[in-house]
Image 1 (cartoon, rainbow, N blue to C red):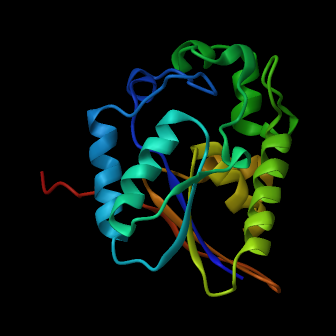
Image 2: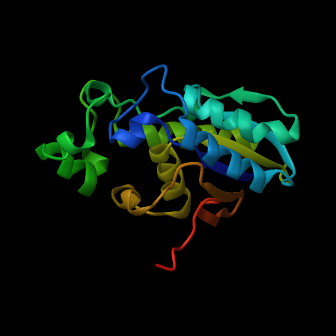
Length: 205
């Protein structure tokens, strides 16, 4: 089965301001986000990518386009890679939402949470895992494919395929434009890399 490289989109102004973008249209990469995507593209320029897939949202598609450029590959939109539907929480500040009682459920028991007017985490996990299985059926076992998506769908997919309880998926860190490598095999899955960030540096100060 193929090697899937899950890539979180680069930074955008919603992330910088601490707001939930959800599925709002018109959320683009900012300047820092483009630099994130370019660093990831540089890291992957020699990778034998067979295909590049993206969430339909602009910030993901723009990240995918930058990564695809050195390979001369088209970016194929896959709706199954889209962000969680945050419903009424879209465009709300995380700081404000963190004061709600429901926020404790999001952080500690997400398997029991549904965004008001939106999607449940269980539904997001089912959707992204079905998309992964579909991609596996469409590719040869030795293929390497890139999937540009969003933090929660990627973390939920990793949690499922490595056997981590859904209620623990929030413990998985995922930086902007980071690479997470998941090898899907008939007998199970292997997490080869989690949250590899090409821009990460450790300060000596």
